[in-house]
Image 1 (cartoon, rainbow, N blue to C red):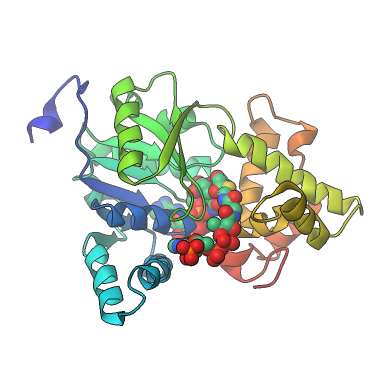
Image 2: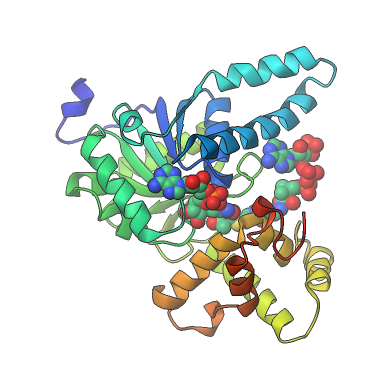
Length: 306
Ligand code: CAA
Ligand code: NAD
């Protein structure tokens, strides 16, 4: 309780309880790696159905890990999974879990107002020491931090994981001009505790990876729209000619086409240094697929059928 009332939280924050908002592709993966590495985690989503879906993602991912680890024993596989799942709680109430959170990780839909609303209400109930982070792909962290009180702004950063979270080693720790250096160090150490490789970067559109990756993927869509090659051939070309594990269309389907569209449209409209630029101009094909509810792997169809 003493921690809750310190006025200058310049000291390092012991992180035990983690609350993850969003149980989709990213949220479920973050919950999984946190629980695998001995953190107590609460996964929050809007409905029991969404939470079930998230738990399903975690179960099937853990099964892959368990099968490799205990190839000969189904009992041991199940024990391994059950032990990890003892550290995972779920909730449809966003507020109660925040009251005992040391670290909040937001991984809900890529919409600035929805995220700001969530952060603003969490700020009212979370203890002073709680570190707030967003897994946003494309939104300025400072815009999200502004939705909280000034004391929280210095404890607010980006914590950007990559899909699939259990497999991808990188986490970008995104620093606003206001964030406390101790908070950034705590987040770097948290990533190391998850056995990830953190990099530090500034709060610019797309940070490091997406600034480079998203324009490349959008240009692949425009290339096909210009009739220069098929999606299949572009994917083959980038896998065999550039050594990428997935081609840009496979990767777009993997990321989620709605998420791709939120990212790119946002930058085209108001990305710092990117607004109105050819680099992020919209793709008609992407717009049509999203309109038709074809969101990629997560909905069973995107550029490809699954
Ligand atoms: N959970 C647990 N284990 C998993 C897993 C998961 N979700 N996915 C794959 N694995 C494991 C497999 O069990 C397998 O393990 P072993 O080699 O020990 O047997 C290993 O990973 C390889 O899996 P696969 O053979 O099934 O697949 P693969 O070799 O084709 O690799 C991949 C799959 C890692 C996804 C690879 O295709 C890849 O790296 N793709 C590119 C992903 C990428 O670029 N992600 C970034 C997207 S952008 C982003 O995330 C940022 C944003 O803001 C939008
Ligand atoms: P997703 O569509 O798979 O999941 C989003 C989840 O958030 C859904 O389950 C939805 O019900 C839930 N949600 C929406 N509003 C909520 C609220 N107010 N409270 C609680 N839950 C809420 O999306 P995703 O791919 O997991 O992306 C989540 C975030 O991570 C986005 O900001 C996205 O840009 C970012 N991100 C995505 C990827 C990727 O490859 N998909 C990679 C890195 C970062």
